[in-house]
Image (cartoon, rainbow, N blue to C red; front, side, top):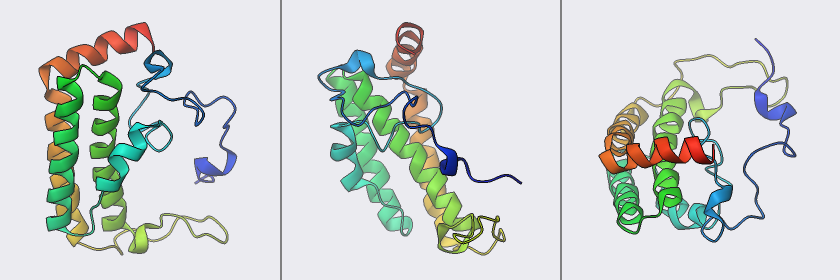
Length: 158
């Protein structure tokens, strides 16, 4: 297995930039794949991140419901970028909770030599958190107006 992708990350050619206000310049936003750009795109990161938690099933439920409410609020305000960012945070809740389910402390790679650590050593409670986020993520993905706007946006902006 090769090195983790973050070790050779190409910031210069990354589609999302920290110095862009995506609310003022939505045309600069790219949907991308999965969760790309989720921890960069402001002001949305700052609006959503404080609500993103998955420590246990109760916290995950409260968090996913709040983020889904933000998703709906962005949709009501015809703010596709905000809705897509909320969707990405829901997806990231699922993937990060799964990481903590699979690996103790959520670490997939050893920080010293970057070899992959043993899978199956994580917290089983996080699997429940992951499922909660998964359902909210898929609910957002299936939202009819969002799904249509996503297709149009990807075609127009990427």
